[in-house]
Figure: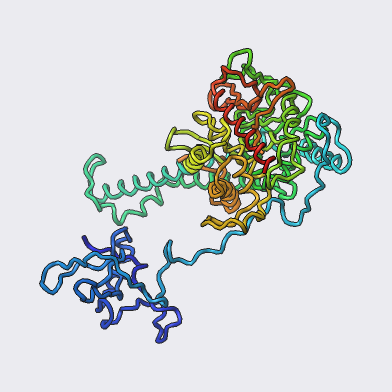
Length: 544
Length: 65
């Protein structure tokens, strides 16, 4: 097989080499290595034959064969080249691994192994720069979560409410006729433009072939020899169909520009106040400590970029669902929250006999059609909290977070949907982020690794991975990503320094620290990719 | 720290987290989290008991050491 040129296998002179040789191939001169003008010949082929996985000659490297003591070339995979011994027969040293290494001053072309790494991304802060953490809610005795908020909390609640009301009155936010439908409109325009581009290309080709046929005196059904259309490329310029298609494309692109700029214009996102972005979609149904706890966690614990993605996702969902948004209540049951009664009509399905089956009134949090996300405080969650008062506190768990856990958990479910993708692997449809192979692998590892993983995350089908995604998000968001004091005591080979998040994840799910770091790296990466634009939220993705 | 930690009510009955589902089809799917008593007819009865015992063992362990 012909050897392929792999650039990183061929040493270059260092940048500061004299005689202007910096960056040139090192053994271009005939007296070193392969000699001759091989480098020029090979360089000329770059791009013609892309680098494959085949071995290639690491020129300039030679080693004495330990069997026959001949000088033998080292091939790209680091083995001695095939050669014959003194008796003229194949030397058994052929293919033995070489021990010499390239000189340290050799400059190699960037590759995954040797390339210059980009500077590490800055650790994203949870809170926007310049904002101070507001005072935590005071610890309230259990049973008083439905007491009205007081003090600094009252001011904050009033602030959240006023922003919501302001946006409602102003009417520019998330009304079905404006922003929400505009998101759908943009997606439709993208589709139309794509189709129109194809149409234009077809019209141009048709005009070109028609002109070529005319020039050759052929009928429209007669065979046109290949290459005959050359010289007739400009025929499309005067074709009325081509002109019409171009005009339509121009108009569609103008519409798209307008729609996109309009969205940017009337939906400013302020990362210091992410809850205001929900506008009229945020329904605060009560004025007590429970609602305050939920809202405080949402504002302080969730990175603003996730709020932006979720708000746009909920707005987009309002095409199908008139009550899409976030509902936070405390004294009602889920079904009492506006409009949800109409959506939650059937009894919940699942396991258990009727006598012991949960009813919707026992449900703490719910996500309906990934459009409505509601949290309420029930008797059960009250007892749950009460039971956890004496529970051993875990490392990294902030003291002030004791209520509204279901809020972050359900937010995790909505975020899971908002960061979804079009799944061409398992089922040909839009799917949640938790259906991605990457997450399924992590979930599988946790199931195998952990002896104390709750059966709630071992459920069959999509239920297990989805619940684990939402809950791992909740745990990840609950702890600060600061260095954990145990870090200095742990000495085994590890991915990176251990943070409080890692330790909390490891303790919660009973996994190793390395696996916990994999989970927190997953969410860190999700956030980093979303901020940098490497990963788009679901509504901005195109269907493949 | 997990949202779905089992707990005991006043009568000593263990309550475990339950994923409740409703609605029809993908678009109208309703998923929620609630609590249901742990009874022997629960399909994950053994697993939950094991989990609860392990947690109890962890607690004792932490208290002794």
